[in-house]
Each structure stands twice: as structure tokens, then as C-alpha cells.
Image (cartoon, rainbow, N blue to C red; front, top):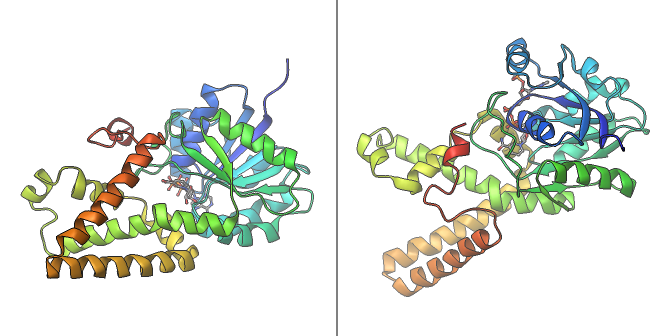
Length: 309
Ligand code: NAP
């Protein structure tokens, strides 16, 4: 019988993504032998122990990475470099370090310089999440049929990347490789800018003192209510995303503003043809997402059950 994909896995940071990784590993015992975990606060470590998150919860990151064959950095993007510096001298020679950060170019430039030469770095980003955070928010199905993008750095052995791919496929994800800059641009379009728009829309409604108005909430259905759900996402994580994916986000925001002005003009001029053509095109995009199995047609976007976990 062959052993697990990685004998020992260390999760640094024990929030939504790390806890989901752990529960997904437990669903598929062939992926890891022992899983250690570390988070910066005693409170999170105590919670992890209480709910059985990780086989062993450690008091320091250094202890958690001892003898680990795979170390996954599951902390906010802004502290990836600092955490790597803390553990770098204690990494097992030949091990793989990976991460789950939502931005890739910045993480690579902050993590790579701290790593010894005998350690491989294979950045990763699972395109799955909810607006919840913390050790109790994870669930084993989070990555099922979602994409996980691997962003290997130059010179990484193909078998090292293949092993991590195998691991993520075992967690339920579909895996693809992508270049770091392309990743950051794609994510600026599909995730980062939409989040910023949701934050803005909720902020505007609040400025108008309408957001807590019971009628607004009661009749908002999936439109505004979905914005408020997205705008409830973790402030630290999203601050770091915008600070570290600045160029791509600003580029997409520029394009967005132009389109918004065009729609504004069409409304002012009563140009129904423009509006109809535009909305027909966007409806087809939505259809494509459903056909690709990346969302459901359910009125609550299929998130209801998981998001409330
Ligand atoms: P989370 O639930 O807020 O958890 C973050 C964890 O990092 C917490 O356990 C926190 O510890 C720990 N942490 C923060 N600073 C630390 C430090 N300096 N040293 C050690 N631990 C530290 O966050 P998450 O949603 O899992 O996100 C983690 C990463 O995944 C981020 O890089 C994010 O960009 C990425 N990501 C998130 C999503 C999403 O939708 N949430 C999706 C894909 C990727 P304490 O609890 O002790 O503060």
C-alpha cells in the first residue's frame, strides 16, 4: 500500500480556508498523514483544539512546520512575507511551501526571497470562499468542483507541482496552472472589483440612511441582499487584496467607470436599444457560468446552506 500524498502537512493560519482544507483532508484520508496547525491568537488556537481542527495545534509557527512535507500559508496576503521569514530556517529540506492567497505576484515577491534553496514554493489560489471567516467557518465541501489555480515559479520541478495538483484534486478542486500576472488580472475582473463595487453600493445605501430601513432589506431579494453579503467579507483580507493587487484593480476599475458612464448616458438619452443589447450580452455571460457548473440557477445562488454554516 502506498502512503499519503504528503506525510505531514502544516497549516499556518486557521481561518475559513485552512479549516476547510483540514475537513476536506479528513474526508479523503490518502492525502495527509498528520496535519499540524498554527494561528497567531491563543483564542483561535483554543477554538481549534475544542472543535478538533488539526491533528495537533501548535503554539508557534516554527513548531507547526517542523518536519512538514507541505506547508500551506493560510494567512492574509499582507503578512505572507513576515510569516515566511519566521519559519524559513525551520523548514524541512526538500519540503514544499504553498499558500492560498487571493493575489499572486505580491505574495511571490514577498515569500520567495525568504525561502532556502532546498525548499520549493508553489503558490496556489482556491477560487472558493464565503463571507465568513475564522476557524469555525470552514466545511469539507468548500472546494468541491471549484477551481484551484497553481502559479508555479520558474525552475520548479514538474513532479513537485504535480504532487500539489494531486493534493488539491483530492480536496475536490479542479486544478489549472496560470502565470502570476494573468492570475491577478483575471481575479481583478472576477472577484476583486466586484467586491469593491459591493462595498461601494452598501456604503452608498448606508449614506442615504436606507440600508437598515426594514423595507429595503425586506424587498431587496437577491440583488441588494447579495451585495450586503459580499460586503460583509473580512475587512483585513480585502484591504490586503486591494493594496497588493493595486495595478490590475485600478485598470479594471477604469474600464468599469467608462462602461458605467456609457450606461448612464444611455439612461439619460432614453437609449433603450443600448441598454437592451448590453443586458442581453451580460445575461449570456451568466448562462455560461451556470453551464460551466460554477454556480447554480437557484434563486439564492445555491449558497444558502453553506453560507450559513
Ligand atoms: P480568516 O478566516 O480571516 O483566517 C485568517 C487566519 O490567519 C486566522 O487564523 C488568523 O489568526 C491568521 N493570521 C493572521 N495574521 C497572522 C500572522 N501574522 N501569523 C499567523 N497567523 C495569522 O481568513 P481566510 O478567509 O481563511 O483567508 C486566508 C487566506 O486565503 C487569505 O490570504 C485570503 O486572501 C485567501 N483566500 C480567501 C478566500 C475567502 O473567500 N475568504 C478565498 C480564497 C483565498 P487569528 O485567528 O489568530 O487572528
